[in-house]
Length: 298
Image (cartoon, rainbow, N blue to C red; front, side):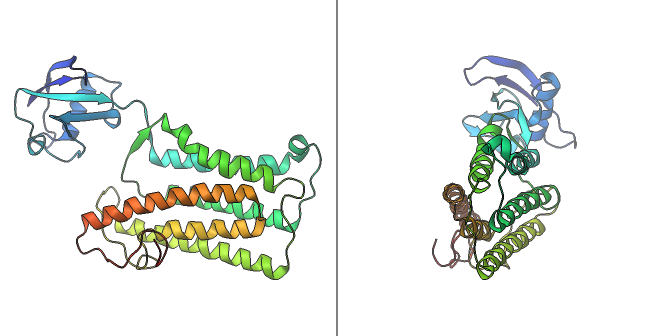
């Protein structure tokens, strides 16, 4: 198969690009990307976006013929998505920020606050909670999660990291680890906060494990999740994440923690609604009683 490659402005990039199939059958979108990469080395497949007559060719396994591309004379539009970064790397870098920022504020108190800070029990427990949360996130990123989308634009990394590095990292650390940054509580109150936090963290992990087991390695297949939390909501992982952060808020009673929770829970709810709608659209038999994120509410 031979195609002409043009830019979105109509400029000819490749007048006659030959696309052949590795398997010997009809060439696929993946074959198209490999052929173009062979001619334009900087344009590795992950940074390529293709359209034909306004239709995006976004399924690598789809044959070009099934996308309506004729065997000859086709004019395909190419867009460079820019340098890409793998999603696993993205998440590892996002979660690394707080893991570096919390110890910085904790141990360099004289530099940051101009004095040696005598931290109380609440602050010490909050520090352990925060560190444990992001260490768990890093572990899950490496050993648990399976990512359906290979990459994202490198330029988005800084925008994505703001949420974790600044709101969760700098803001919470600066306020909670400061002199008198968190109040003392009774043993019972502290134990209740720790128990709620542990429940949220363990439950969050269990839902992530269920999602992992739904998708075989290397697959993008989607199934209806069932089990722990999923019988009530489409995204119990987000709900249990919110439970954990609520425990941190109850313990620290800090406006900085509240600010982060408002942004975090708001964003997770938007993601949950999007996934909930996608489930219902993809699966006609999707349970109608499920909510998006909050059981029995929304």
